[in-house]
Image (cartoon, rainbow, N blue to C red; front, top):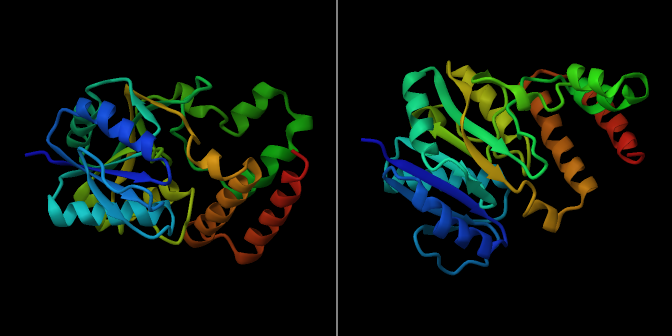
Length: 273
């Protein structure tokens, strides 16, 4: 029997979390149990979900704590990690994603089409090297047409991405096979924000699993609704850079010197964009 464990991380966004649990989760359909992981310490109770208070040690840590709680209390077969700033477009999204995992036993996690306010998909994506992501993508702007730049650096790659295997699937709404998730070692708690998906994808690969994308069902995501309230664009870029540097260093075997040089140039570039 399928049991969906749902993890929602809430950081000082109580009303948004309550709305999501009240209005969106009833569409899940399959048997499920939800835990709201409160890292802001502002929620006292929430109807329709269990409440777990944790220290603010980052998104990966909060997700892992929620997953551990579900493992110990309801033994889920799947674990859904989702943000609270989402609107479910396809009411059958969980049933479809669960069926996709069943059809593709090599997949450790699967995600739907996630559309943002700008009309573009938020992923999926294939792997991109550190220097290409941090430096060349920006320095090439004067020398490449917009169309050529989009092609070389896979900008908006997800807009036309077919169903299949990818290196990145957004954790804003990610359904993981519970056994695979725990076997892979869960999310890496050495990151605070960003790069969680890249790392989990690589950890899944080590145990012979992969990330899969199924665009037959959709979610709308108000990306950054919480993060933007507490961090400016430059702060977000620096947080993302730190997490990605850690990822490239620990999981993609980039040297310490290379990581420091790429970070140095990226910081300079941020001052001019």
